[in-house]
Image (cartoon, rainbow over all chains, first blue to last red):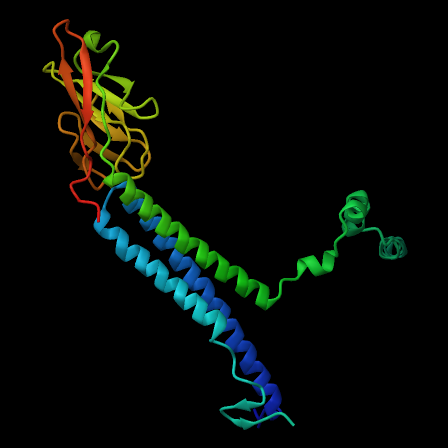
Length: 92
Length: 194
């Protein structure tokens, strides 16, 4: 009978993996927000050329919100400290 | 046979010349003038990429706000039109069209004489993405080749396709000598600028 027991990894290594995952998720979110903003810009250009003025303000507000989200992701959305995480005090 | 192959493999492996070396040799003079570290340049740190995405986001926001602002400012301005004679309009045969410039030399427009002899003129920019429309004789309508939109040749109203509003109509005047003059271009959008 085969056993599928995996070796237990040290907790600081697990925390490192978690930090990398959070950092990568942050980058992916930033890219997604940029793609959404690109789409909003295309819609704004189309509305401006078609002189659909009622659509312009919501589109600019949406683009501004995306920019604010980007700023929050860059400045405040960071992986938790390696010393203090939800799983407790890790660093020796 | 096998030993020959082995010898060749060894010879190739021993030769340290590769594509990378060729590139380095070829770009050596340029490297001397503009020194930079190839390996360092190839790497982009996470922080740099984050900053780049932040700047892109700012640029996209400024672009959207700029486009919207310019459209609103342009729409608020009330242009002054001066009458302009359309050369060759009197000789236009029914069921054909003529291109002219109005109100400025940069604005292309199209004059159509329908089968019943009536004259109609419109700005040539498609109201979808500003491609120039052309007169389709077979169907007697104005068509946009970019995204397959079509407009009525008499009214300028959208027949089908993505354009969201009719073409900008141009007011015409036929003077005593039979010459056709463009006198004004009407506002294309029914919406008021904010």
